[in-house]
Image (cartoon, rainbow, N blue to C red; front, side, top):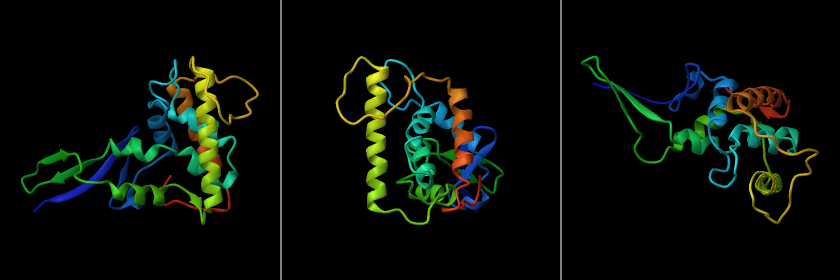
Length: 190
């Protein structure tokens, strides 16, 4: 007989249990570290800007109840590459394998772990996408030799790329603050 667990390992001994999200061990700092290590616009900007810093930029222009959604933009795609299946066999050995097929459990697990508004309208969804597109245009115009037309974010200063560690810490602090909004459905963990 074998016992199978599908996990996503995170820094600082944290993890997401895809079958039982409530049993996950998760801190916003551990998620921030993951987002801080991944480039937001790889191969498009001349300097590295992390997904954590990019999400922070977009969240500044996002209505407060929707900020946790914007702050975790791109997280599902990033985490899908980190998942593995741990199988404990009767012989006392543990094997690790990549999951087969789609990771539909990941969307459910993140839905249980990340606070979100009780309802989100199509207008709000369109607004989030508009903010994200404006952030991409702004970032490309400031951090590459491109001149991209389209809506931009009204920034008071230029974007200064942060170290992955600093972006992770700032992201975690902002996420903690964003999750305190009373209109949000509270998560099982974090």
